Length: 85
Picture 1: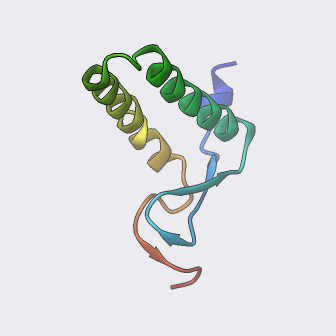
Picture 2: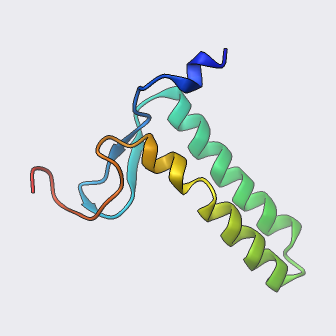
């Protein structure tokens, strides 16, 4: 089971313009993206009455998986000006 997550397959396609990742290419990418969004929304809902704590927790959860996104994106994460440029 662990081998499904440790292969060298890329999970995300790169964005055409800008910085970041595009849509997922594999089920692992979809699972990661859906889990990430659900976790952020859960923190926001749970801490809605404590805005400072909500901001800190949401920011941390947002930034924490960026190295994993970068390592699983074709070509890594960097600024792009369009395909082939």
